[in-house]
Length: 52
Image (tube, rainbow, N blue to C red; front, side, top):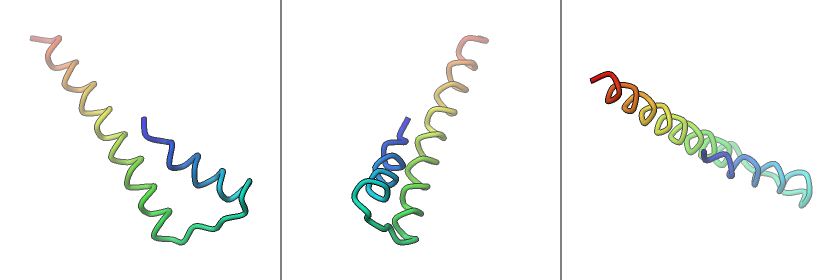
């Protein structure tokens, strides 16, 4: 899944003392949500195809 932006943001904060603004955190949340939706849709599609 696409949790890499979360790890990158947290690593930047903890290691490099960088600070992300609200828009950056919102963008990270959108990316993670989109990745979760894709995984959910793919698994639902597989379950539907197996039931045929």
